[in-house]
Amino acid sequence: MDTLYIIFSALIQSLTEFLPVSSSGHLVIWHHFLNSPVNALHLDIVLHLGSALALLVFFWSDIVRILKAWFKSLTGHCSGDSRLGWMLIVSTLPAAIVGFLAEDFITNIFRSTTWVIVMLILVAVIFILVERYARAEKDLTSINFKKAVLIGLAQCLALIPGTSRSGITIVAGMLAKIKRAEAARYSFLLAIPTILGASCRGLTMIASQGTTMSSMIKLGIGLFICFVFSFYVIKYFIRYLNTHSLRVFAWYRIILAVVVWLVLAI
Image (tube, rainbow, N blue to C red):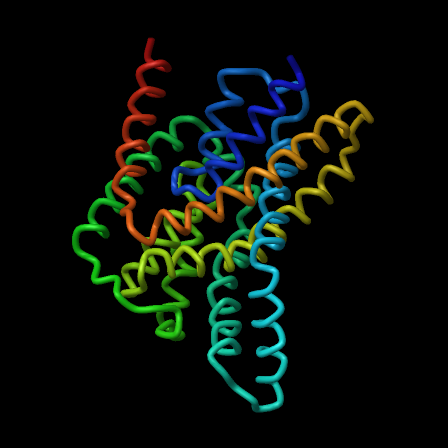
């Protein structure tokens, strides 16, 4: 049963980290109704690391190309890829600063099913409005400093469980008139330093608190499963967004919030 719990937790993380439905929100709900065989926070940290590793592998060629261009820009050789690298840095800073200064506060205050319900519904409404009114027709070359800051500020909201980091940054990109699938690519590239940074801090916390060999094995199983499934979710979700909107995810979020609220009310 312990292994099954780890497997299902990994599958939930794999699907919900990149689909705009909030992985942290789903994991909070999951842990609320079923007791984790390992420390729930430790498990979430390791599963997010699995998602980050999947991003690194999937976008490896893009990462290498952007990094090469970025280093060349330091010597005055600028290009579209170097500009994208600088914009990703700009977008990363707001969440990095807020996360560093307020991580404990956010974890203690917002890590609850009540806040998950609120954010599931609130962000779903944002999805619907953006899909209705946004003129998303440009590619990543249109991202400038102002748009990068907008997306970075939006990512700060993802620190609250139930928001969805991918969802809020995709709709922020769409508000900046970037095509849906292109906004998703930017969102996923942006997620790499964000999730890796949070995972490294989390792993440091796990190391300081200590854990048993049995728990380490279970966490390792979760990490591997999450890595494999996350890779394919990234691949097919980007394809999906080329021809489909976010509305189905908005309605899913609303239905999930209502169901969880009814269960808690009984």
